[in-house]
Length: 464
Image (cartoon, rainbow, N blue to C red):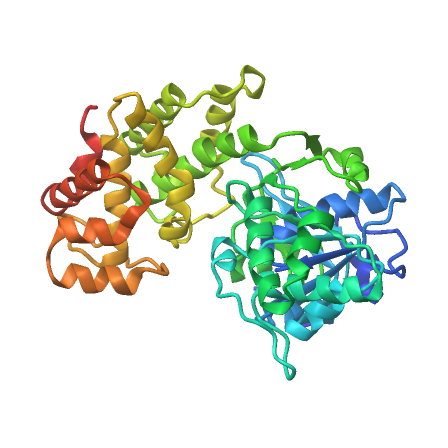
């Protein structure tokens, strides 16, 4: 536990920080980037790239906004926007980097609208999670601005159009296939409720490049914060820990060229990079989480050291590589091997329950496209059905032989638990997958659910 006399990280204590790097650039300029959802991932990813640009003398200050939660504001504003990124790798000392790219953090729809209409803002990035794109599009009223990110963006663009201001670039950094297209679609839907002429103007004038981001950044625990504070010599309530690996691949559009100076890849087509990450990193990550829960492991790192589970997940990766057509230049097999090694980093502390949460918004992107690709080639999909069955069991509260699965948080948990009380596994599989999967795979999942209740963890040992 940190000592009671320790001071908090802020501008006037920065010189006392025991860090590998601290910001020495000017933080007084107007920010050119606005970010919606400045949580742990944005701090260890976007802000680190911005910090490196600023060290090169390039403008990249960030104005952070949270539409609903005040948590980030409460953490960051007492620290003048400063926070520490702790890089953790097995067998290496933890490195500490104080990042100064964030210059303000605000909360609420009005603050978001103000930030997005600021003339100096030329890039807007978002990490609002998969669920943020499914929020109802709420039309604005005279008394208050909307509370969904797509509607706030649409309203900000209406105001910029009236003021004659050029629109910024809007880039999603969430783990979604074609996240830029998804964001564009939701913003256009919101625009229709604001002004019938707004949607065509946005479609013609505003760009929403898709991007692929990659860095494992678990939510920091109190132990993590205490450990960082002891090393830093200052209390940092906004600190995050992350692995060393990071990457950002984004569709090349005007205004993004400076990002290439700090290692961001600007490409014409991000689709193959999206498939590679979602199918060969995020998908196996989810599979490891659900298999880990079934095998009784708390963390991802512990789960991947389980030889039975490691063999099961490796089989899913091989099945994916068999069915997916990746360009040779993407080195898909090497990428997949690297992802499995990264899962084993015990310093990250990713829990299986954390990674397994919200499976209804993750698996349609990470699992079902691979299932469809294998079905098209008449290849076996049993292992994928087992993964889906474990997710359903843990979300619906189904009794599984030999293990007490934790009930996972998920937007559809209520519907699944209601269906589970009727004790109809076939119906439960349909409720969980709906129209997202074909009838054949839905039946496979129902069969896997039935076997899960009687065989439990032994299901992971089955030869395929």
